[in-house]
Amino acid sequence: MNAPMRRYLDHAATTPLDPRVWQAMQPYFEAEFGNPSSVHGYGQRAEAAVEHARGRLAAALGCQPEELLFTSGGTESDNLALRGAALAARRQRGANRLLVSPVEHPAVARTAEQLASEFGFELTLLPVDEYGQVHPHDVARLLTPDTALVSVILANNEVGTINSIAEIAAICRERCVPLHSDAVQAPAYLPLNVDDLGIDLLSLGAHKLYGPKGTGVLYVRAGTPLRATQTGGSHESGLRAGTHNVPYIVGMAEAFEIAQAEISQSINRLIDWRDNIITTILEQIPDSRLTGHPTNRLANHASFVFKGVDGNALLMLLDDAGFACSSGSACKTGDPQPSEVLLAMGITPEWAEGSLRITLGKHSSADDVDALLAALPALVERARKLERIHR
Ligand SMILES: *Cc1c(COP(=O)(O)O)cnc(C)c1O
Image 1: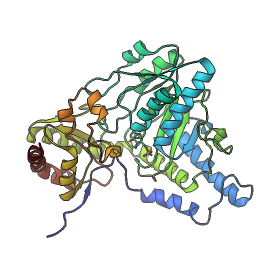
Image 2: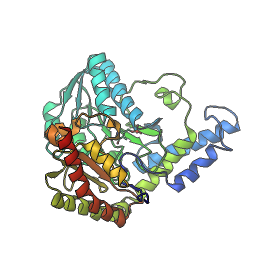
Image 3: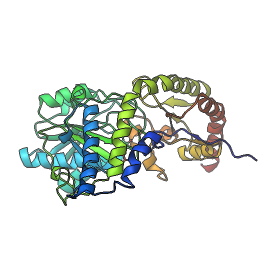
Image 4: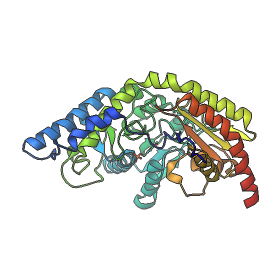
């Protein structure tokens, strides 16, 4: 029997490295291996590469280079934003409350919980609607003078929904409370200008946009109080110690510039396929529902729940048939709990357990979409039969 063709439909989990990015990174693994903190020529050339990357990222985001901190990825950027801004706000103005959406990536959600359980912050969760959207009027209603920080995800990793960050930012600005947004899923599909967004802290990572894993950036608007959480040398203005990962930083700048430059091309290629996936699945698979907003969602992102299905069993059946998909969050593999994000949107556990996320990318083809749509109805039916046997 021939092995089925392998089709990667999980670009929200990670993306392959763009060859242009790899090319930009290579010299810094080889001849230009210096430590940017060293005084000699090796160090100077490595430092110049880091600062050039910072300048390119700043130009793309519309900020000053000094407002960017390099980190080890989206998770660290989220941790530094929340912990660093919460501790600074407490120190500066005695603020003790965190206002966070219930549909955050675990990098934000677990950090906020730890700030509550270990550091004594009061955590207030914002409501979301059935699409996973935060409404600005709820932010206005729940924001108090003792709020240290508000955090609302820009584009949701599990359900693709895009939040109205600029409107939320205007409210936070008026009340002088900093707003953080996790934008890790956004750069390949949404233009990101920090002033248009009105944001104070923005988390980015490279590996969701055809860059390398293990590198990220945190934008911190000038004047936003932040405490260091990783201490050591004086790297990154003393706010994030550790020798710079030079090749990865160079790769991230290259990947981010390409992603932002190719947004309309990416959207034009993918959006009709996305909508075809959504319409066909809802039509052909009984007891299926779209999760997330029908239109205000990432152009590459289609996500569903199927009643009476074990999401992980469906993923295995899909994998055997050659399709690499996800149940929503790559961080939950092996964890049978239904997604907190789906529950927060009011989806019952019975439905939420059968979640499926299909995320297209640069190398996806019409053939990938057709093959998936041809195979999926029967695979969902098989997963339902398995589920009935197991009960
Ligand atoms: C992937 C992801 C993260 C974590 O980023 P890493 O670079 O993998 O640590 C954080 N937030 C969102 C929304 C993500 O999709």
